[in-house]
Length: 614
Image 1 (spheres, rainbow, N blue to C red):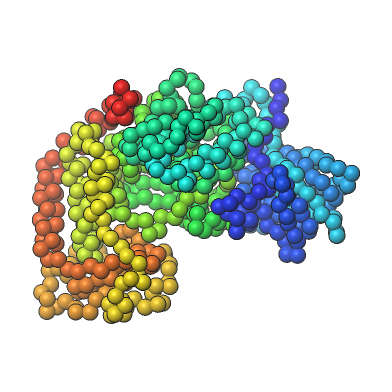
Image 2 (tube, helix red, strand yellow):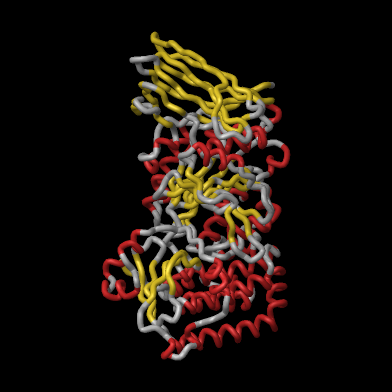
């Protein structure tokens, strides 16, 4: 039996998080006028182009993932004008016209159904031009495909989001999901449920829960514990759900992303039937900036994005986004929006109890999934710049990543040990003694073995270590004379640039294991220096031979003053040498202990006990 299956809706209403960036949804030709009308309708006087991030049709992806060769654009219009269908051919950046269809519907609403062959095209789009001196109204629209009903995959989709006292995001997201799914006329409406895991136990679960949403109170066991609880809910009744989407709470979501995820899962073929789907993260502060969709782990233990930043308000970057292959080795998808087949959880287990950091990466390393991505399957999330916390990005990262190497052989252990030593050395150079301490804390706690992590109170640990993080203050509150002496000018503060390309000399200089702490006072400078850092990456500045350093975060809005502490430096170096000696002695046994413990630590039995469910 043949079915006319909906693939994607045309989204006419610009969401609040992108209100100043309508180019994500449609582009208005110069001289044209567009008005949003009640009922998500769009009144057009002139020409409006819908080949955009949200409304362009991903011909390349649908052909690849679902083996589609033809689709139909369905539009409900009022007024008179022209619909232009056009596409971008393989390897090209310029759209070519495929069809031109007039409409004249002055007596009332009318529907157009325009078939489009996908062969040779990477992206399909359309524009609507009103008849001169008149208006046309786009009432609604969608893309559909004729498919064999027997080949439509069964999909029952769960969405799990973990929250901790973040009502300002989670409540609107619950409302958005409820409204968007309940109004959708496709199959997702009857095959979808949302689980909200409340790690803070501050939500009114009774009033928020209904047929579409279930709020699950949970102890504060971090992101890994919250997402494990959501996975457990989705797998509690065998065969109830086929897939689960894991999603952060502090995001802005489009219900259309959920709808397209469901439809893609329903029609995926071949190896893509069991694939993961990872949604892209776009910046809340800069809504056209796509930060990441799929990443991978390098041999050294570093994370690498498959794609660099893209401006998805531009057609050229939309095309690059579609054409870039995300099926790479050592791939993982961050859990701001990640759709996982339930059978993968049943086969390979739940997350490791890392609390925060590396749980999503480790899950990817363990499952080795094929990933699918697609324009408009995404969330908007606060950018990461200026969010460095040593308690998380040093302690949690190094502890959990080292464990992950033991579990999944995802990186070279010797190179990661060198990465630890390099991290300590670089932080000591910049007199960030606490960050260096946190790296060694993570290293030491890894060597303690999995039993230590099983019994660790993650929330209490994070609170305790969080109190030790460097306290940053607004630059406006810092001593202006000290800033002047350090070279922190107005130009430096205004030059917010996250890309830094050091010279070959500087690359070489930073690789040398020097440290000013070894120099006598006579060879040190009395003049302070400054450094701008984004995590471990130095963007600008120089602290060579400086006893005083003005540190600026990457936004250049906050900073701190660091001073040399020779005694603490010696203590940290001594501790580093002791831990390295211990690692040489105990490293092999620690690695084996982590490997042996993984089946239990990712089991339902462990998590039920860890979460106090039995």
